[in-house]
Length: 334
Image (cartoon, rainbow, N blue to C red; front, side, top):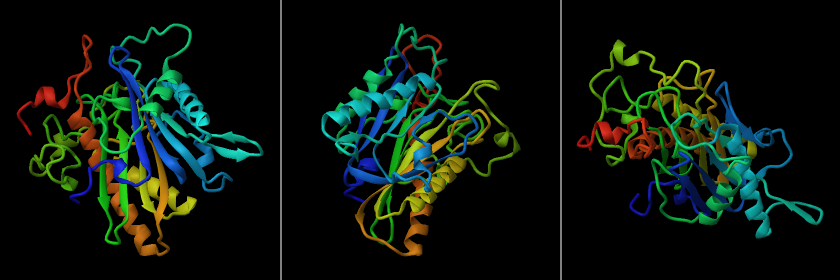
């Protein structure tokens, strides 16, 4: 894929923007579609936080969205979608209801309130303004991974979490890509070492090229959690340029969750809020089952790779007691 960046912006018509506050220890990421995109999504974690996620059910009337929002801040972060809506309204975007246009902006949030950042923001949270800033920063091409946007304050059981992305091309030439903020209750790495659970799917040494440490043993499988009573959440999206119905996009989002299960151990716990959105820009026609099944297969793989990339690229927050990043522990492992 020489013409690809290995990012979700490899999908034509998709832009990404971040708002990052290292002092706050949190941030917002916006995925913006040039044109309304057919979308759905699924929540498989037991402690989710989201906005307009019910709208994504295939049985609901509205079938397209203008943007997705991934944000830190736990429930306070739900203000971010309001800022994104404000920016989209400025430029005339949104679902038409008579003379009124209402931007459709589903959002998922992650819990990053306990990472050492300064959360003393006063009466109103900063997330509405951060959502607006992230939208204004949205662009095609490259964007920051790791401790950026929604991945700014993310953590895992073993290393600092972060924002990751990856892409692939199907045999029919359709592109599919994932973006994810990795704030897992469990771990993206095997046991106490540097190797990633997603290693079998790695391409071009994108997260260190370490492979697997042989066959993981019982000690490696032991449950590692960042807290027994600490809510977490990994949130992301899978997007393709292949034409999909809303029901097919729903199926694609489920395949994205399979990527969680291949890159995180454990995943989908009662205190995780694991959420995956899915969307189709419909730039390229498709109407056969075989192509849909391959897209689902690739959605699993790009999500697993994106999770590992997010942790691999992360850097520790510049605050006292911040969780160490993979790069801090293994600076010479790449």
